[in-house]
Picture 1 (spheres, helix red, strand yellow):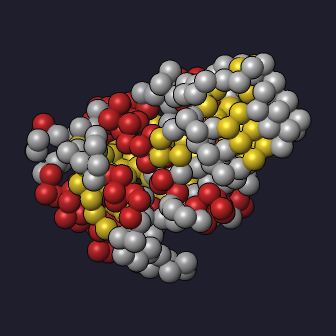
Picture 2 (cartoon, one colour):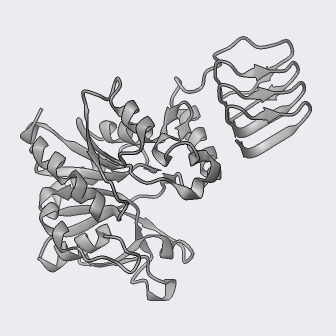
Picture 3 (cartoon, helix red, strand yellow):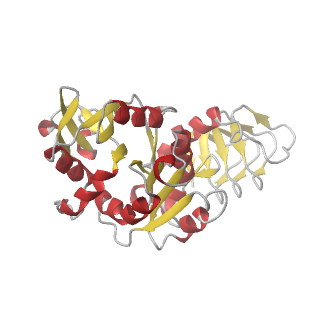
Length: 324
């Protein structure tokens, strides 16, 4: 597929995810499992559901698990890989993806980070907003609190269009409470502006600066407010993400092994193969037990994710927790 028949999604997945601690000690944030699937698969499924039938993923060349995953089925025929050898920011990552984007031959693309998912229908609505309003860029917008403002870009609006965008301001310097999480519907014209993006005080090339250049060049930039997103930034973020898929995807909520006597299951749960369960334990609701974990006799595990190699001691009470 190429040209006007393709809708392209671009996923930025070259980051390590240092704030996830031990969860990324042997792999990247993109490969952290969410109810049985890597986080990046959740993001790609979201883009496909939003109409993207081709994908470009920007990876770090050292991330062999991610590269191997994308070169396997079912992704090999749908995903084109690009590589960001130096982690120099989001605008730099899109620059690394530019040859692959141009090779597909599209006039627009959806840009997403590998660590955020949005309500079903938002990707389609964002694409429609860009098209129907004649925008060069449609930004996902979200109302944010003062403590969230320093973590993302913030915009001001005039006559329904974005007229200013500031990257990670102090709360007192923010032009509004409209933050910009990393999901955009973009004209490929944004690619021509990337060489002009300056290096920031953090030593990175920030994508909001590309949007600022687009506004200064007379481009039309608008937005679509979303009420909620789920992000994978810290270990406890696994809980709401896992709960989302346990409740919305029946293929996630499965018990893949026989249960010992007296085990009580309160759905939805995911109990993978090679989980060692003791008798008389209680599992669920909203719980994921990954292959290789052990739960002792009489333990209670609810609203939790237990990673492989972890042991829940007999009689323990585990609630609202991530064990790894």
